[in-house]
Figure 1: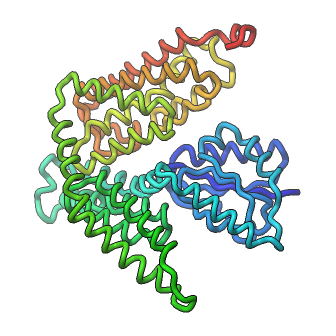
Figure 2 (figure 1 turned 120 degrees about the vertical axis):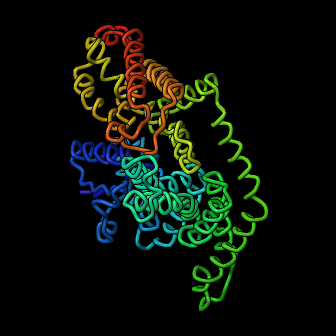
Figure 3 (figure 1 turned 120 degrees about the horizontal axis):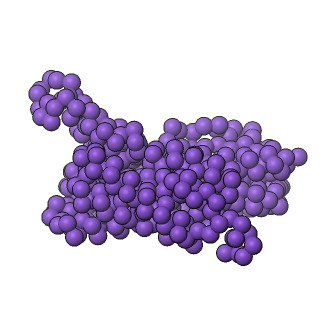
Length: 460
């Protein structure tokens, strides 16, 4: 029997990673195919694939939006897709992997070179590199934000008392975790592009961006600059075989770090700082009308592809502003991300005849995912009826995001849903925004969707 191995990893490591793994495992069981899935999520690597298992595998499925150490699979046939594809079409991916020609040991070098070329081409995607950086940064943002919020529970000014527990929590969260946020973002963007040679210049460039005041935009710029520079140096510098070891240890880190640092200090830093300062001042000066527009836009983006690139763009924007002490967009983004699954659950309750029995059962799970700020809970509904579901959830999320901004809601934690809602201020108006958006979504669905029997008889 042919053995297949797979790796799944999404940008946040929270939902798509495990949904994709579950879908692949279920499809393999139905096809009676031996499959092992390694997940690389927020808790780290689970069910790790061994070298022996790689050697025995017929082919590899990589369903990932971040770096998953693909160099392990040199010489093996690889099916490589976005993580969402494994959720939508797991059987198709398994069939594609089974139909691939197994690697020929006699032609191993050819397979390795082909694999390298494919990976090199795939790694030029800026979205993947950015999401690798965001994925590495998120634990720092979450831990730091929660620790800062806990310090405020002792009193708004309690952290100012030197030597106190609130002061220590503020120092850990704001002085350490948040200070590392931008350097880690930049470092792992560069790592995704150039692997280990890119890490040092990326970290240094990110730290300089943080010190200069260029914020997360400066960190992104530093990460891409350091990564592509390190990759170019790795491919360009040629040394005698006995001196090749100097490249990754001495030459590339030295040259790439120096050039990245100098460009950040003298060329890139100040213009990006100006952009960040202007953005921060604009957000502070938002009137009601502008706040509504920003909330509408962020809300609609969160619902548009439910965890895809557009959703992550809005989320990354809000997370990045936490470092600039702007907490309104984060609140709007989380509220808008909770609304789609909650609205779909409510719709299955209000108009059950317009959903299949499987969808009605799934509505309960969607509700749990919704309150946990896992927007991906809406994906199964959107996949079965995209032209009615997606507009409905976008309208509901846009309303929620706009109301959150109008109510002046703020949030320091970038994830957690109902479990961090106590960190929101004002919490009751924030809850009201989510409830209204949920109701709007459900009402839109009740109007647009047709009864299941009618759809079965009459098409779309």
